[in-house]
Image 1: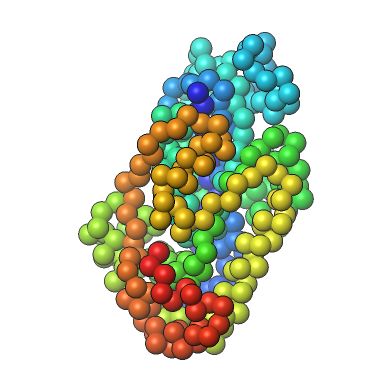
Image 2: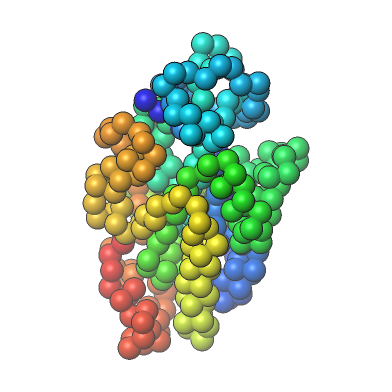
Length: 313
């Protein structure tokens, strides 16, 4: 059995919605907020309780259990939570893995799916609030500065500690852009009862948030999409030496059962039916979610990005 302890680094920057979408993209590309978020996690070799681990340190390793593969000993860790006592589970070793995702690529939904596994526990977005970053270790500070700014150091950290990496990416960059701009807008507008939310749990909430239609800057649109593509490719190249799996949001939407089985197998988790209460916000045709869709359609028609216009996910 396996237990997974997760922590998150996503949307680290608070960006107020500027007047032009192109400025949003350039700012976020340069600042890493739209690049990659990191979810640091660990897998236990034995089933433990399912409490959430908010903070933990390594403590002195006990004698290794006979079921432990000796070749994996350098990659085993013994977390010591500060929020509760693991008691009899304290000697159960864990292996680390990380989820590397891009903003508004379904990472929140994916996390809740994994968290529904009986052996999975998540810390939530622990790198987001400033109070959770003040006393972080050197490696956490490195992660917080950005995956793309310190690829060699983080790659070494992953390999030295035997971290398995899950890349969660999104093919349809145009839909991702719409989701990003809508989320940025809501940080100030707070459409849902005066509170900003990035994820919703009912069709009514999704319908309310999706009423906002961003106007895209068609002058820079193709360049912006190329930049987003380049960032994802660079991230994959940077960490190609790690043990990793690539999952696309669109495949997860179309066949969640099969894709989640692949993830469970990759993490050596027992297979279970994974569920989430989150509801997709932007459903249906993109023409319903972009204010100047006719301009966008004209700009992207005949280009490599034309396929993004019709896909319904």
